[in-house]
Length: 161
Image (cartoon, rainbow, N blue to C red; front, side, top):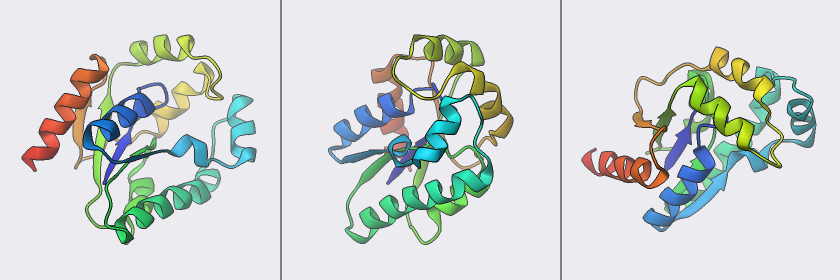
């Protein structure tokens, strides 16, 4: 199982979908698991608190656990910004690999400004970088590259370990 993580706008969903297709497995976009109240907050430009995120992280973990119990592969796109969040996601779930999509704030701002029909706006980006604790044990992928190149790099790294 793979969790594609990083700040909003880095390409988690796009990369995650492509990675799942290339690995021939199911894909889950954790953004779809947010409570309506949390979506309203973010739509209003209010960053989520840890208390807001805990139930959401537990829903994401349930997806990972379901795949684990079914012994099936899964790719999840989830910000997983803090180590404590990653601990919640992996609690009792073996063999979760994190892929950290990393790029500059300038690239992310450009992508966020091009987004349509998404509740996460540019005003929240600073809170994402403030909350981000870069993972020590993750595959790091240069998200400024073309999606196919990023996915190829991830697949190569997954095969090496």
